[in-house]
Length: 487
Image (cartoon, rainbow, N blue to C red; front, side, top):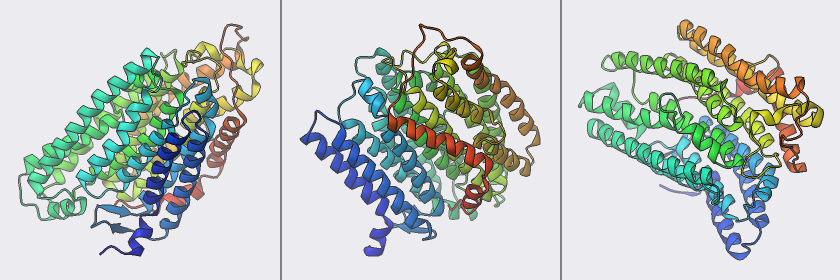
């Protein structure tokens, strides 16, 4: 029965709903300026962070007839996604002015995307996941094509929309197969069904694999990665950053939950577990090798970060292997997602400071001699790239360490060795821009980087987090060790 207690549990989503309606209202009243919508968006995201913290101590509960889960995992993920989105809202104002993106719909679509992502990570039903996936994805398609006069942005939006539509169809087909086999679309009921299995095993396995393939596509794991470089390059920098952080975080959390959809302790599904492990191994190695090797060949910074994202997906899949043996290892994946998103958010906010329009000045050569031209920019950018490498005393070191330890605990030593080799290969790609900034003389024809005070403040906070979490990671690790994978 629905009561005020349940209403309080839905606090973050009610705040987001009100924020979405408020941004629509202020957009219609003052369409020439983004400021009212920006203020409303900032207030909304801050309130979502506060309400999600308030729910963190509530334990695990379900609302709306078991369709939405309130747990430490969902609350922490929502808090983090809202925080990263807030960073982009506050720090990307100068970029939007430079690109002449003046319409307030930008903020409305951003809140819609966060709303969809928040439902996605909290959904306890496959059909609810599908609806949330579409609510998250449709605003992203529009944001990717926000530069209407840029052919690259238009191409990226169309490609992302078509492939995203195919992804949704695959997920929905897989859901229907799972329903046909188990008689339910609720995660808890499917898990209970798997314990006493009575149904069509082949139909369920095909449906489960289709659902998994849909989200492997969403996180751009090889060989489902082919869309990512073009979409990253064509989308506005701030939108690319949101895709790389908020959407990736939500998609990967759901992917982990879907891999744990059945009880692998049952004799019926034990052989299927070994097949799933083999699938993850193959996809992880392809992502690691493909991402790290192609990464070092890129000349465009946004395409480089796209292949970097594919490479990091490989590391996350290694962490997923650990959770299949020990579900409590979910903390390693969440910590990796948090660290990677902090680094990525900082990098894209840095790139948004380029003085060129339509993201034209984001080639690797534009960083040549930057230490002499802009020491602040070069120093902070170096911190983020060193974090990507996984240098000690940066958060990137401990993100890799946690997933490596998780994989080793699952007996995947050989694949950890492969991942370590790929980390060395990828390090060249991240160290190359640092060498260009520090060891070369400035090129007069290269782009300049000038950011607003808000942009620089956000970047300094993110760079500080990279160092602080690299020196004192235990606080966040201990907090994330309380996370549970609950069917």
